[in-house]
Amino acid sequence: MVIWTIAKTTVGEAMRKKILNVFLLVAIAMIVLSLSFTQLGFKQDMTIVKGLGLFVILVAGLVISLILCVSLIPNEIERRTIHTILSKPVKRYEFLIGKYLGGLLTLLINVALMGTVFIIMVAVKAHFSSAVTGINPEHVPGGAGAVSGTIRPAAFDPSLVLGVILIYFQFFLLSAVVMLFSVFLTPTVNFFASAAVYIIGSAAPVWESLYAEKGAAGPFVKGFYKIIHTIIPNFDYFNIQNRLIHPTHEVRSMPLYVTETITYAVLFSVVVVLIAVLIFEKREV
Amino acid sequence: MAVAIEIQGLTKRFKSPLGGELTAVDSLDLEVQEGEIFGFLGPNGAGKTTTIKILLGLIFPSSGKASVLGKPAGDIEVKQRISYLPESPYFYEHMSARELLRFYADLFKIPKEDRKKRVTDLLERVGLTDAADKPLRHYSKGMLQRAGVAQALLNDPDLIFLDEPTSGLDPIAHADICNLILDLKAQGKTVFVSSHQLADIEMVADRVAILVSGKLAMKGEVKELLTTKQVEVIADGVSEAAAGEVKSLADECELHAGRLTAYVQGTDTLKKTIDLLTKAGASLVAINPRRRTLEKLFVETVRGGR
Image (cartoon, rainbow over all chains, first blue to last red; front, side, top):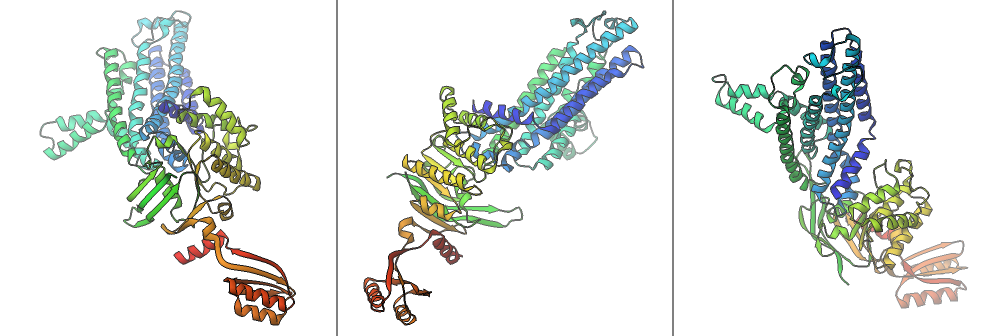
């Protein structure tokens, strides 16, 4: 109950942050404006709408999660609001998890808003393209499903929802890393450190190939690559945009892949938040 | 009477990133009895807030022990029975006072059926009923302090920590806080108050401790600390010659426009002074036991302790 109380308050405060709202509005505007690509053929236009939409959600979500989460704990300490909270019967882990949960809920609201607009825009694009060209997108590789004259459930592409869900879980994991850093780093240092972790984690296949490659480097260098690959979350798992934009690419069972990736995000986040809790227990406020 | 706060050899050192060290609290021993108002005094940087933060479990001692209501400082069960009003309290500005109190009531796990009544009663008690639904960012300092007082009373605490509760308040809010402290004492609560408003502490506190550079410089009952062995004698129509004679008997003596104010010690000296003045034709205006102000005691202690 205490965790939920703190989470609700965190959402209430975060949703009033003007800078986050500006990012959200700009992102939504860009997703809507992607509809204006009508110069190319249906397939190319749809590729642009999907590609741009997913990219905008990814970048906006990344910026929002970094800006939001780097300040969740330091702001409480700096403004001394934490003093009146922790002097009450609130355990430190309840406070930290409450803040994390609040950050996740705020991100969920933001990603859900962007994702909903994105999926509607893809459906609208499919509808109007079929109306203008007479092409049924269901018969076009990369089409959005059967469309004939009106927006119907068939225009809804469930794989895009899975893509948006994976983007969200990417931030779920990143937020845990940011929370861990926020327990002992300043917001500015945390911003850059977390961004670095994200970039390194997104390049996981590079590290993987470096330590797997035979004879390319000495054992120490390979060991270093292996350590990086192990301790830094693999954000590349969540990047399935290409598979969604070009469905002709071979993909094994999408629901299974998404389930595995979400499980990875949740388990990794639990471990990271546990470390944050252990450090925060000894943190002086 | 049971002990509400017990501090033994408490020391807190802060380390700087460059390897330096600052001792904020140095081997502090202190006991606060249940039901008393305890004034915790000291100049800025003396270690008052650090001590309070240790007692609340917000920071940890470098050495020594501190217990609150019989449990180690920071104990989660004890936190259900204590409360804290920080200096210049900061709250979530997007909330109204009512929302703020509901939030803290949830942290105290106050059942929902009691919560509404308690919040409404407290808003009325601190005079915020009319502004209860306005966001806190529109509140004045005094109103924020009232909201802070309300959150500190939500759990009907046995022990309340007040850190500079009257600083920056207008006279009305100031008087309200002093009355509140006296009300709490009447209800049998223990109040641990840190303040620079020495006149307030002198008025409300049973006992005080003065901290200088992290060390305990003085502690005791206010009455005892402020009472002196001197007696003040005031007389009108005193001549220069008579004043000269009184001066030889008194510890201090001043003459302004025929009014003499002298401070003497001991019954014999007092009798001699009165006889001398009477014989000189002066009229006695007042004879009072001399009482120091807490401010004077504080200044002397702090200057002596540095």
